[in-house]
Amino acid sequence: MTRNTMRFLAGSLLFLTPLSALAGPVVDFGFPDLLSHRDEYVSVSEGGTQIPPLREGTGGRLIGPALENFFVVNQTGLSVYLGIGTLTGTLNGVYNPYPVPTAGVGGFQVSAPAPSVAAPVIQQYYWTVDPANPAGAKTCIWRVEVSDVGGSCAAVVYRASYGGAVCVLSFPGIDPTTCELQLVTRIQ
Image 1: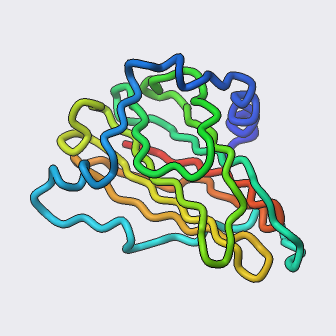
Image 2: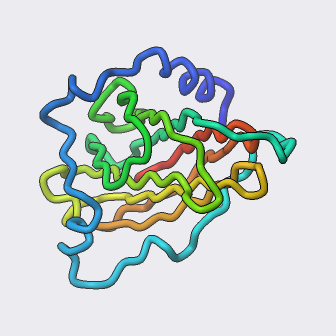
């Protein structure tokens, strides 16, 4: 990832918009409803990818609540919209511009609670070109699970796609001490 892209992603934190400002375009279809619209079986639990640490963790320290940043690079040729199936924590807002225009970068941020050994923090969401019919259009579904593993934060991401979408995990990272997470994905 280029230095300019990283600056853009870091700078975009300044442009969080409250979700209430998006009253129309953000539609929550719920993840189970989305899957029920398909004839074939799709699993998001297969092919999980371990998210690498952003730096070495010290382990054994008390981990706490953290910010989670979920970015998307839109390469579909159409605007993409966010749908949230499971949210653990508080949605801080989405990054401008929203909906994410073609060849644009956007995303959202969550203030997540600290995971425990028994209860991971789970975010399940999707990006789609058709918010009225995500199961019938290019859609990428992401499920991110953050866990406490011996006093260090670890995360696994799962993905599934609809409508011929190509869903790519581009730049993931988690801070093993604080659980701060950054996930950059691409939809084509």
